[in-house]
Length: 77
Image (cartoon, helix red, strand yellow):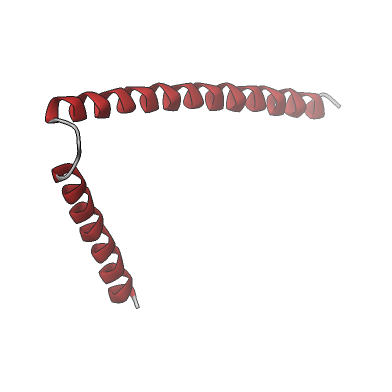
């Protein structure tokens, strides 16, 4: 069972690499443009990820503070 799953995963990954290679070879942009586009997209996604991480961290801290307050209130009863 696990062997079949590994074969499917490996086949998928090899297909993805082959597809990406073909796409790069037949891309209508030059190498410099392509690298610039990739860098721009990577920077954009990185900023978006950092923003989401900070938001999640703030939400988590707010929830921790709320639970801490509830715990102290229940202890003082």
